[in-house]
Structure formats: C-alpha cells, structure tokens
Amino acid sequence: MRAARYQKLSDHLWCIDTEQVRDALACCYLLGDGEHYAFIECGTNEGVPRLLALLDELGIARSQVSHVVPTHIHLDHAGGAGLLMRELPEAQLVVHPRGARHMIDPTALAKGVAAVYGEERAAEMYGELLPIPEARVRAAESGESIAVGERVLEVMDSPGHAKHHFSLWDEATRSWFTGDTFGLSYRELDRDGAAMVMPTTTPVHFDPDAWKATIDAYMAREPACMHLTHYCRVDEIARLADDLRQGLDDYVAIARSLKDSPSRHEALVDALAAHAVGAAQRHGAPLAEQAVRDLLAHDIELNAQGLGVWLDREAA
Image (cartoon, rainbow, N blue to C red; front, side, top):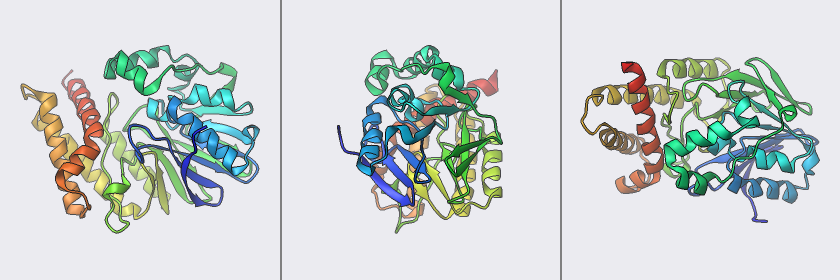
C-alpha cells in the first residue's frame, strides 16, 4: 500500500494529501479524541489507500473510525466514499441532506460528472463510484452534532459553492472545516507563510449572495483558523474573509461584463486567469506569471464553467 503524505496539525488532527491531479491540491482530515476518529472528506478512489495507510502508520484500527464526513458530494470530496466505507466496518457516512441519496445510489452523480468532463476523463479521474448501504448513511441537518468519541463537530449548512454543502465547527481547535466555501488557498502561493485565497465557482450552484452569508456565519464564531480542502489550514482569517468577499464581487463583475461575449467561455477563462495573476502579484506570491497560470489552470477552467452556468441561470 502506498504511504500517506500527511502533516500533523495538532493533537489527534492530521491533514492528508489525496494527491489528486497534483500534490497539495486536495486533502482529507483525520480527527479524533484518541480512541475514536473521523475522516473529514473522502477524496477520490485513488486517494483512499493513502487514508488507510495513515491509519496503519498511526496504529489506529479501522474499527475505531466512527464517521466519514464529506462536506459535499463533488467527487474530489466524496468520490471515494463508497470504497472508503467498505474498508471501515463501524463507520457511518454523514452527509448534507441534499447529497444523501447520491451516496446511496451514485448513478446520477456519475452521469453529471461525465457531462462536465466527458465519460473517458471522468472514469480516469474518479473510477467507479460505489454505492453505500442506506442504513450506513446519515443526512445531517444544520445545527446537528456529530460525536466522534468525546470530540463534537457541529454541522452548519453553508451554501454558495454548492447547495449540498455543509461545514463543521470543531470547538477543540476553534475552527471550521470549510470544504470549498472558504475558497482555494494553495501553499505554493504563500508569501512568508501568509496565505491568499480565491473563490471556487465550479458548476452548478454558484450563489454569491448565499456565499457571503456563509462567510458571515463563519466569522460570527471568531474562528482561530480554517481547515480547507484545497488546501490545509490557513490563519489570518479576517483578512482572508475580506479577500474572499472581494474575489466574489470581482467574479460577478467579470462574468456580467462578458455575458454577451461571442466566445464567452474562452473569455471567462482568460479574464479569470488574469485576475488570479493580478491577485498573486499583489499578494507577493513567489511564483512567476506563467507558473501561477499553470498552477491554477484546472481551477480556472472549472470556475469559468461555473460562472457560465450562473449567467445562464440569471438570464432565464
């Protein structure tokens, strides 16, 4: 089994690189109280062996994992759920109510992903999505709690990126596990340890107003840090929250300015790439312009698709 790449963040909290697309693009978290553990996010099928390898390395029995909790059902977060659950006999999958049926029967989910990427590319990236028995799936409403032994995670509905998205408050670290709703923040763009953040507007539920309300709800708890799926822990939360709000406003303005462009998708890609380069330069990121474009090319393509869907919905 391939060894896990991981970082211990605090007592009983680890960040695991799921090695999707490239290193340090997406992660899962292993969290617990010393006796019981949960995986927050699942990654893809390809990443599941890394999660299991970490359990083995830490001497944690698979039966000690009580919960698997994807923040939403996009496949970089939940594609490996079925395979992972098959290996964890005592675990319950906890998911947003809008996502539960797709974990039980992933047929429609697989079709939707194939529509975005094409069938061949979708199969290459995500493999076969395995169903999870209904009895092992819990749909958690906003305000409910997940008890991982003595450690308690509070669920909060967090739309903006997706309607089937929730976030988890961990009082032990005074932090949110934010999935995609605190944006993307890659370590390659850090300046002297200071992070930058950008929105992720992938198809099909981008809602800037709902997203800003989610940010406000995050900040009401006065979090000490945030744990992102893309990628790892970030600090200086007030600054990043302001930057993310500004990024959302910028994306909306870019999209509306290009809504009637004859080559709208290509124009969106170009404009978002230029925006990212500008943000990186203002931040003082250590990468040259082309390196920023290369690093973010995958995200920018998906963001352009998501903004296109949003524009069409606005016009309907």
